Amino acid sequence: MNRAPSLSPRRPAPAGPLLRRRPAGWALLALLLLPAAEAAPRVGQHDGFTRLVFDLGSATPAAPQVGFVGGKFTVTLQATLKAEQGPLNVPGVTGYAVKGGQVTLGLAAGTGTPKVSLLPAAAGTPARLVIDVPKGAAGVPAAAPAKAATVPAQPAAAKPAAPAPVVARPASTRSAVRPVIVLDAGHGGIDPGMVSRWVVEEVVTLDIALRTRAELVKHGVDVVMVRETDRHLSADKTADLDARARLATNDRVSAYISIHVNSASPAAQGIETYYFGQPLAGRSRSLAVQENGGSSVGEALTRRALNSAQGLLGDILAQAKLAFSRQLAQKVQSRLISATGAVNRGVQTDAFYVIRNPTTPAILVEVGFGSHPVEGPRLATPEYREKLAQGLARAILDFLNTK
Image (tube, rainbow, N blue to C red; front, side, top):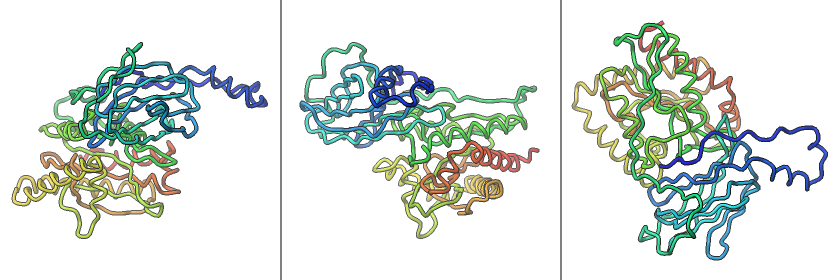
């Protein structure tokens, strides 16, 4: 996936006292005087749709208006965007144009109505306009693209190579015998994960992972971060999950921890930790499918993971590694509940694709429900995330027998 625009949010103009009692016309003028947000889209390919993500800067605009004008799909925002246009050679989309607060897409023949989402700015992450365009039957543009681009958008890479993992080590003497932990902040880039009125999953998981790393490094543990910023490893979800899981498949890694935020009905709350295996009897498949990519992609990857689980039953070495995973999961669950006082939803098994490889103790932890009216706002606070990070780090140190 291309990431042509900078992900650093622009700093909004200071709200001085002169703006407090101005009439509505002054508010519009102040909006127009703000720096223009980046406009070139990031493009990702998903099963059944093409995703375009526009960064909007640090201010979250009001809900957009959508519709068709002159045969083109338009999204109108109360924001000032950098003027750009260009062709896009991706399924469902022939080109784009941005001017003022309006984003216009040229759609391929037979393309359905796009789905529009607005993700709020949070914790250093800019607000984003997300447009999911259904792929047509042919999957290729049928009409000529828009006029020649002033600043052409780069075509999306099919499967970009995963960047080298970032390893954090203590400042003291570094030895090859130091334990190595992989921290996977779930989602990121074109896949924000769960989104509620209080939190965005990719923001929460990254913040907790960075805080956990800081604590582990203090105790002499080397930490490999799957991501340190709002990015993905591949625009293709299967390749993305494969790249994450591969970071754990070497003799130096002591454990792999994937961090996520749960979502369900408003009544659901609490923390639960998983290690790989068959789902418990009667359990819904929705969580594993959701974390494995959602829709048909998630269904396919969950089936592959379940096949792996079935194949591990007769593998003595694999069973030993899964026993260590269960031990790690139990320590993490216990420490997180003790640190936060959250509802204890227990340790469970399920077919999460990213932890399917049994060569390293690996777990997936759901640190809470961003959809819960109490737990969601809690997850939005630095203080609660620090409690989660401290509990997670302490559990990992317990597992490593490190003080």
